[in-house]
Image (cartoon, rainbow, N blue to C red; front, top):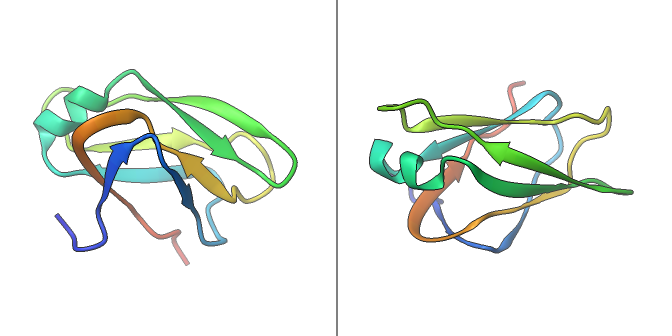
Length: 93
């Protein structure tokens, strides 16, 4: 797992500009991803907060959170899943 991994403890994580359609999440391993499956996250925008769900296929340590508004999100509130570590991938250039 990368050095800038974040533990899922319900925290609010600021996001850099650039995410538009999906917010890619990489989990420490497939077991951690399964622990976070069906977890709700809150995607924060400048004028709204949208609930979204994390879905992880079996055996995969990646998930994508859909971004449903045309604006860039400003932050994401992670689920409260102690022991689950994620890395939020940077937006594609």
